[in-house]
Amino acid sequence: SATEVNTLVESISYSQEADFRIVLIHNATADEAELLAIPMQFPAIEFHIVINKKNLGYAGGNNAGYDYLKKNNLEGDLVIINPDVTVSKNTLAELQSAAAEKKVALVMCRTLDTNGSHLYDFIQLKGFINNYKKTEKDIVQTDYAAGSCLYVKRTVVGRYGLFDASFFMYWEEVDLSMRYKQLGYRSISTTKTIIERAPNSSERSANALYYSLTNARKIKKKYFLKGYYKYIFMLYISSVKSDFKSFRTSQQRAFFKSLFNSLRN
Image (cartoon, rainbow, N blue to C red; front, side, top):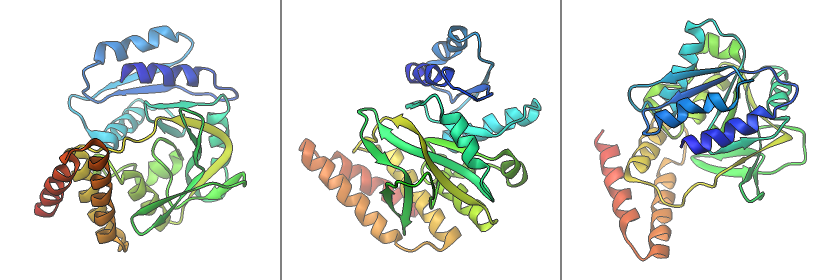
């Protein structure tokens, strides 16, 4: 929402030792007027706004932002940040510093929830199951870089492209990390800075479940990743638990509808 974006921009405005501009991407949501008003509250920041006529998803929306940078000859690395995130004063500087490591394409950082609880520092991918890990190291390798706050080296994206837009949402940052890894690049995480993000909802819409299942199958085919059917089972168990808590069956119905549509397509 525009309110979340405003809070994010405010946190970015306190950044230290960082030279940046902000590209706001409007992905055909209903709050265009509110989004367009945000730059007026931060006159010291250089803003650009990309208006998408339809919702292109996380992947396509951010690709549109990158295309805008290329078209307008705007240089610099990319930091892709979700609206429900707030950054620290040193986040941009520490991400950039970590990106100077050898053969690095993507950087993420230590992540807390909005209550200050430590969520994770890096991610291990066991098949299709995410294992969120913590560490005392300053820099650590991660199987993929989380898309909530993602630093992307411009030299790499300029040569090999950004997201596969067909993913729309879910698994797109996994695909990006794996694709870059095949090309010899690393994904790392730094614990020298923190971001805060809203926790994921335990419930998923049928649309979200559809893309989770469909895109996981794409990952399976592209990278021969094992454990796809275990992932399907885990999603089903999650839907059962969600329904049990709310005394409903809506999540299970959404799961089976999404699974059917995913397999059909």
